[in-house]
Image 1 (cartoon, rainbow, N blue to C red):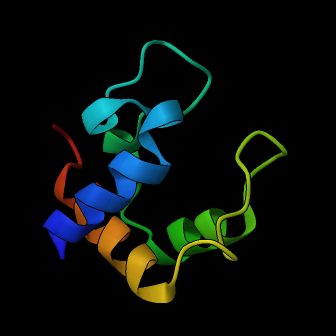
Image 2: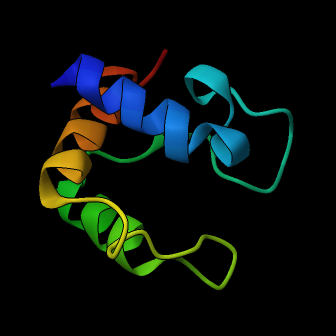
Length: 78
C-alpha cells in the first residue's frame, strides 16, 4: 500500500506538497505533521480544502486514497 500511495502522491500531490512531502515553503501544509486522523484526510482529499486544494474525489479511487493515506501516515514525523 505504501509504495502505491507514494506513486499516487508523486503523480497527483507532489507538485504542491513537495517531493517526499517536503515542500519549498509554499502555503501547503507539511503533511509529515498531519494529525493521525484518517477521516479528516479522506474528507479533505475527496472534497478539497478552502478553495486552495482542489477536490480529488472524482479523480482518485477509494483504493488510491487509502494507499495515499498509508504513504502519508508512514511519513508522519519524518
